[in-house]
Length: 375
Ligand code: GLU
Image (cartoon, rainbow, N blue to C red):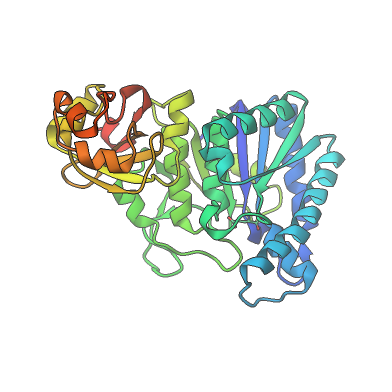
C-alpha cells in the first residue's frame, strides 16, 4: 500500500461507534488524535475531506434517549442536538492543529440531482481552496427514510468520487473484509487486497451492522463499487486505535480496494454512482454486444421494461442473464419505453405519435458496469 500522504486528495469516513461512547458521549481524545493525523497529512500536501457520522449517536446521549429504538422524529431531534456538538468538536480539534474547517450537511438530492451535485461540488471545492477541511454529514434532521442515504459509507463514496479524491478511507469498528462476517464465522479469512469487486467479493459482505452504525460490510462494499469505478481506491480499516490514519501507514490491518484502471470521469461518474436506479431495462444479447462496442441502446434490443421512471432518470440495463451491464439516463418515460420496447426505429413514431429520438439510452449518457468492462 502506498503511503497515505502520497495521495492528492483523501476522503476519510468515520463511523459513529468510533466517535461516540454510549455512556460517556464524544470520544474527545480519539478525535484529537485523528485531527493530529489530518494535520500531518495536510502539512505533507494532501487535501483531506471528512465524512463524520455520530450525530444521532451523540444526540441520543445528549438528550438522554437511552438505547431504545427511536421514532423518526426522535432520531431527527437527536441528529439536531448531536450535529451541533459534533461539528463544534471537529472545529475545535482541527483548530488545535492549525486547520480551519467548514460544516457541510447534504441530503440525497445534493448528489443525485445533477444541478445540486454541481452546487455541492463547487462549495466543497471552495472550502478546500480556502484551506478549510470540509466536515460532511447527511442532514439527518430533515431527511426522511425514503429520501436519505441512510448510511455514511455510500455518502462518503459519493462525496469522494464527486470531489475526484484518489483515496477513500472507511474507519469503522471492523478491520477489513473477511471471506464471511467474522463475528458469525470463526473460519472467516481476512482479505488484504481486492483487485476488483466481483460477485464473489460481494457475497462475502453478508448484511451485518453494529448497533451504533447503520452500515455493515454490505454498504462498505457498495461504497467500494461506487468509488473504484470512478478511479478512487478504498481502504477499510478499524479506527479503534489512537491516530488511526498514522496506524494505516504503520501497517495496521486493512483491506485495500484497487481503483479501476479505466475509471469513468466527470458526468459519467455521476451517472455510474447513482444510488438507486429508478427502473430496469432488460436487453437481448445483441444489444449487450452493441453496448460493449460503445453504441447507444436502441429500443429494438429491449426485451422488458420495469419500474416507474421519467425521462432523464437513471435506469439499470440488464443482460439476458439478469446481471447489470450498464447504467444510463433514459430518453423516454416508463410508459413510452414500454410501448416501444422491441420496436425498430422506423416504427416508433407511429406508436408514440411523435418523432422521437432513436436511442432508448444514448451512449453519451451511458456507463458500462465495471464487471462487464473487466470482462
Ligand atoms: N448520518 C448518521 C449520523 O451522523 C450516521 C449514518 C451512519 O452511521 O452511517 O448519525
